[in-house]
Image 1 (cartoon, rainbow, N blue to C red):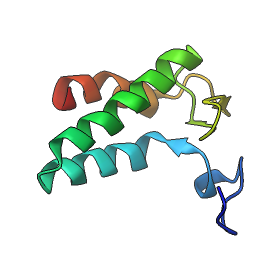
Image 2: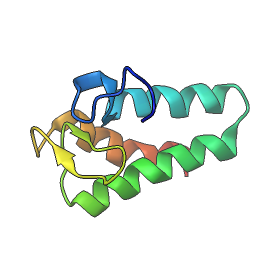
Image 3: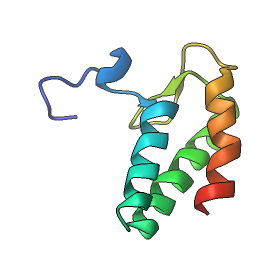
Length: 86
C-alpha cells in the first residue's frame, strides 16, 4: 500500500479480486511453487469466509467486502480453490 498506484477502493489498484487471485494461484502451481499457491488460495478463501459473502472484491488490509455482495465469479472461485489447491 506504499505504491503511488495503490488506491484502497480503486477497482484493480487495491482490492483483492477473484480473477487475479485465481491467476496467481495457478501460475504459482504451474511454476512448482505449490505451497505458496496453496497459501494464496487458502487466504482468499479465508477472506471470503470471514466476510460471510462472495463480494466482487475485498479490502486488502481489513478484508471488508466491496461492491456486489453476491458475485457469482467469486463464489465459483471460493468453491474451486479448495478442490484444486488445498
